[in-house]
Length: 68
Image 1 (cartoon, helix red, strand yellow):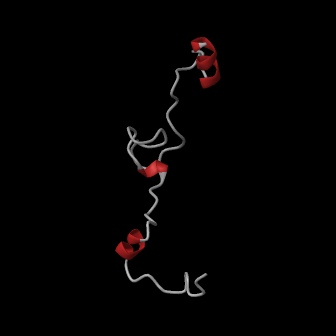
Image 2 (cartoon, one colour):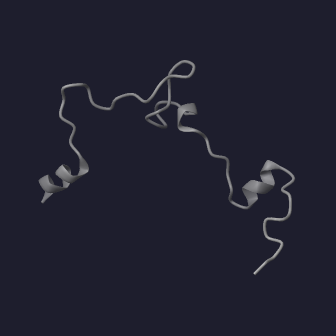
Image 3 (cartoon, one colour):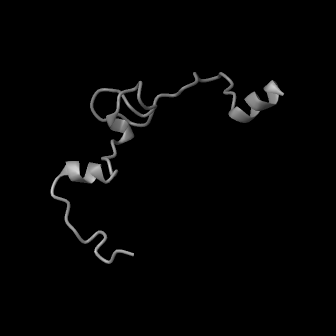
């Protein structure tokens, strides 16, 4: 048990990374290839639909049932 844990101030971002606490990048700030909510010019609403309208989307459960 360490009573001083969390009491010391981190001097720089690198010191925080040494402890394994890396910065979190928001999904909308990523590129489209990195996250479904990424991409677009400026701040865009929502994500891009993965399936076109009118097409049935297969879920993982149905995929598993087809394999067995």
